[in-house]
Image 1 (cartoon, rainbow over the protein chains, first blue to last red):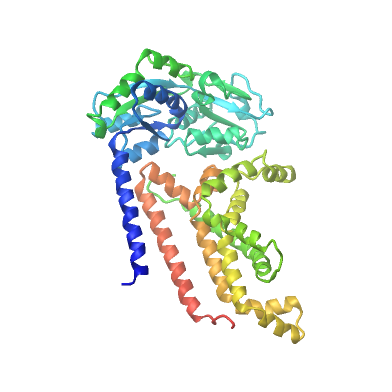
Image 2: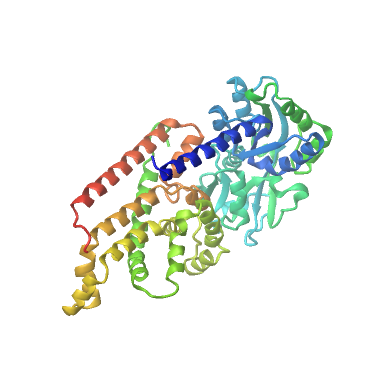
Length: 259
Length: 227
């Protein structure tokens, strides 16, 4: 074999070495939290505080609750799930993929109808959706995103579901739904209140918080996952999440708390 | 839709999208590829690089810019809205626009290398026999470029079939308008409806294989490039 042929192989094995090394490092000691998109913003602030007080490294993986559930079912290496509903955490607990007895509600979500387009002023009702002058209404995919499901319930309850069918655009998760509205691509959209940020910094245009009784409660539950059964920092984090100070912080993003 | 049944809507929509995109790309790509081969302009290298960009850019970059560009506040979407009353995002026309950009190099590059391999001889010969430029192109260049056109058509078509990231970002997942096969498969996998995902994925796999098989066997039968 010539020198030229040998070289790529040597480079290949060096790269492979780095790759394997990297895997073992990555698995060593970082806390991986799978989080429903609506809670990503508050969680970022929260984990900063957690890191400051404990020195633990936290990695966040966000997506729709349904997608995260599917990933966990297929062995995704996550330690904690912060879902946007109680359905999937319950299922995971039942299926043995979550640790029984660790499930609790960390926030109650609120659904908001939002528009940045001044052409669609709306007050405390959904009348604007019965009109024909808007083009697109964005919701999160009801099949995977609990906020999308809540939006569907609201529209059905008010007899608007059929009417808006050909105007619906579905975001893959609530973050994408927010993008659709923020960029003006969708005239209006159902988003999570928390996406306006702490103390509603991003709140522009028109918005209206949907009455809670118009949809099933968006009971957002946390669950410790199987692989983190004995992971101390994961347990610490779940305790941290239930502390008074952190609960206050969660509230400042517009969530309600369970009594 | 009843679960268990396979919705053929996305399949039909995807085929339409790929077909229209390829037609547009062949129309635009022919003069562009020809120009790239024969020009002495100092912009040639720059244009060549731009054409190749979709090969290296992540679809998310394209998707992000298109989301801004095609919306009612973007200059493309805004102008289209002023003309037609609706912007391009979340529409089939928007996907055609996106796919045309996304698949551009897959059509232009095969044509370009085809024209390059022909050289100047055929067109000069035709000219010396009194053929006009157009005539020379239609009766000499095109027949000699069948291989290039076949490759360009198939690659452009297949690449548009496989488009995912861009559509996910600017499509809005609307059945009948922007919900193409790849998005439908993604949706099914996300909610763990694997039987439907299997049918669509398997179908796409088989279709792609058969198309490529056809191209390679046809390619053998077509005349070798002029030299």
